[in-house]
Image 1 (spheres, one colour):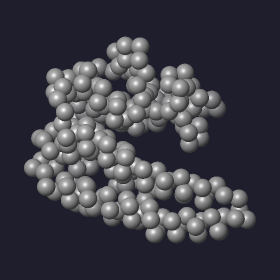
Image 2 (cartoon, helix red, strand yellow):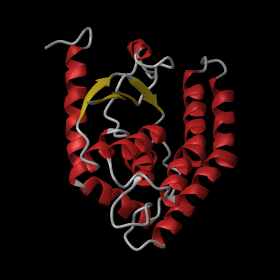
Image 3 (cartoon, one colour):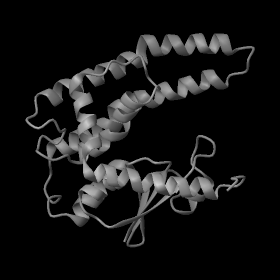
Image 4 (cartoon, one colour):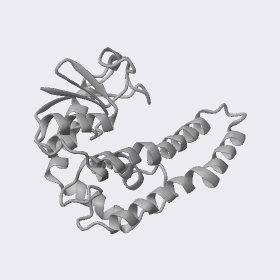
Length: 226
C-alpha cells in the first residue's frame, strides 16, 4: 500500500489519492521549527516532504508523486496529456519559484539582527515590490485568464480536476487562504477554482484525514500536556 509522509496538513498526495480512489496510509510530521524534521531523512536522503513509499521505493517531488500514482494505479494515466503536464510543471517551475523566493526574503528580514533589520527589511521590501510581486502577479493573472477559457473551470480542461489542478492546490491556497502575499490580487476565476476544489468530497476527506493525523502528531510531540 502507498504510504504518504506529509509536513503538517498539506494535501499534495492525499487529495489526488482520494480523487483516484487509491488506498493509502499517511503520517504527518511537524516542522522543526520551519524545516522538515530529521526523521524524514530515514525515508528519503533529502529529508523533505511530501514523499511516498510504494513497493520498496521512496518517491519525492510533488509532480512526480502525482504522475506515479496516476500511471501506476489508474487506467487514464497511460497517455501523455499536455494540460496535465504543462500546469503540473508551471506550478513549481514558474509560480512557486517566485513565491518561495518571496518567503525566503521575508524570513531573512524577520530573522536579521536588530541593528541591521531596518536595512534588510528595506531591501526585502524593495525586491518584493519591484520584482517578486510583479512576477507572481503576472502568473496569477495568466492563470486566471486561462481558467476563464476552459469549459469546466479546471486546469485539466476536462470536467474533473487533473494533475495540474492537484499541483496548483498548494500555491493557490497560500495566495487565497493565508496572509503570506497580501499584495497579490486574485481574480474571480481562481477564486471559483479554489472553492470548487474545497467542495470536492475527495478534498474534504483528504483534509479531514490529514488534520486528524496532524492532531495526533501534535499530541505526541515532546512537551505536550494532555
